[in-house]
Length: 202
Image 1 (tube, rainbow, N blue to C red):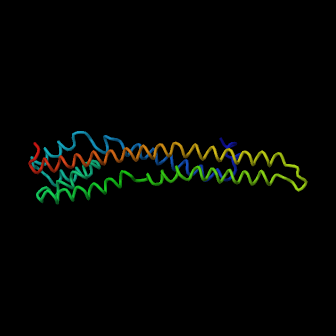
Image 2 (cartoon, helix red, strand yellow):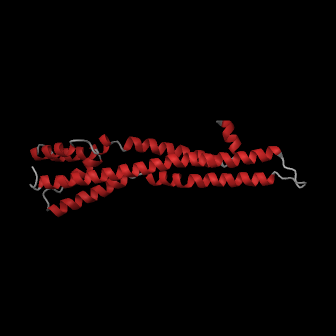
Image 3 (spheres, rainbow, N blue to C red):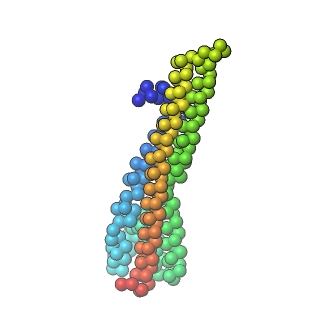
């Protein structure tokens, strides 16, 4: 591996840094965007049941807010349950926008890496081409070692840029779709919460 890095020359170092950041972000998002962690099953029914029993609603709302992103949305609505339907919806929307922002955290960075990695690889290709042309001596005889090094720099950087960009782009699109799906699901559960608490559903 170190021999490949040496053959690719100094333009490979920004690509290596981008690959490390990309892998770290993908792992973080895989852990953070688990369904059981974002929209736990049965949370709405459990929260409504406990809230209607009314033993200790302040503690319930605090626990609900810390429980999960869906819990944060539901607690925002339940804190305004005695207000009008419109105010309850507005509080849910405010909480939901903050949660949606959190679900999309780091995705901009991942998308940027997916976009610029081929360009960084292209930059390495240009550096390699410059070295290839620089291998020509004034007499027109090419230096074989410098020529080979220039070709290595050009090809390795292009390949490595694509190797980083392709999985980063796939991960970025997957996580965007996952986060959007969670937001829609939370919106649906928030609508059910309003209907439950205002007596339109049982």
